[in-house]
Length: 356
Image (cartoon, rainbow, N blue to C red; front, side, top):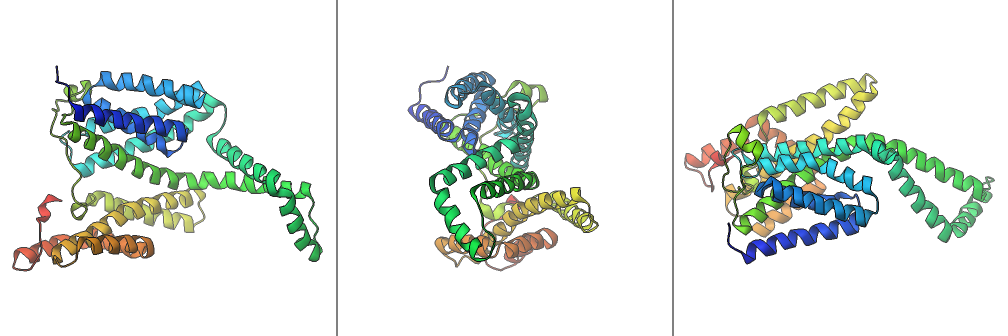
C-alpha cells in the first residue's frame, strides 16, 4: 500500500475542485473536458478508481443538471476518450501518436453523443441549441424589443415598408431556422476543433497530475492483455520538435484536393468534406508551421524567448495562412532536417532534431 503523500492528495483535490466547478458552471459546454481529464487520471491509476470517479461524476451531473439522461449521455460521450487517454498515457507510444489517438477518441465520443442525444432526450442536438438561441433572442425582445421594433419600424416606414411586431417575430423565427440549418454545416468543423482541444487537454493534464503526484500509470486489464507495461509518464516535447507523421500530412493534402474537386463539381457532401479537411489542415499544418518557427528561433540562438513568443502569437493571429504554408513546406522539404544537417556541418544552432 502506498504511503500518504500530501502532494498526491492535493493534486487529486485540485482536479476534483476543477471538475465540480466545470459541472456547476457549464452543464454540457466544453468545460466537461475537465471531468474527462480527471477520469483519465484515475483510469491511468487503475480501472477501479475510474469506475468510482464515474459514479461520483454521474451523481454530480444528475444533481447539478437535474436530468438523469443528460448525466448518462455525458458518461457515454466521455467513456471512449477516457479509456483511450488512460491507455496511451505512459505507454510505449510516442507523444504525437498518443495525442492523435486521444483526439480520435474524443471525436468518436462527441459523435456518439450527437447520435445518442435524440434517443436519450427525444430532441435533436441541433434543435436543442437552436431552442436555446431562440429563448435568448426572445428574452432580449421582451426586455428591449418594443424600443427596437419602434426604431426599426421608423426607419422602414421612411422607406415605405412598415414593420409590425408579428412580422418582426416572424423574421426572428426565420433567423433561428437559418441558424439551425447552419449548425449542421458548421458541426464537422466544430467537432474537429473540439477534438483537437480535448485531445490535448486529456493528454497534458492527466500526465502533469501523474508526474506531480510521483505516480506511475498502472497496467490496466487491456494493457496486460496486450502485453504492454507501465512506463514513466511522458512530457509533451518542446514545440520545436513537434512534427505530424508524413503519412498524415500527405493524406490531408490528398483529401483536401479530392474534396475541392468534388465541391467544384457541385457535390454537397464534398463541400462539407472540404470544410472538415480545411479545419484539419489549419490545426495540423498550423502546429507544424509554429514548430518550424520555434526551431528556427532556437537554431539561430539570438532571439529572446519573450520575443519568440510574441512573434509566434502575432503570426498565428495575423498570418495564419503563412504559418500553414510553412508547415506544408516543412512536410514536403524537411526544412528542419536540412537545418540540422547544416548545424552538424559547422553552422550554429542548438538541440538535436532526432528527437522529432
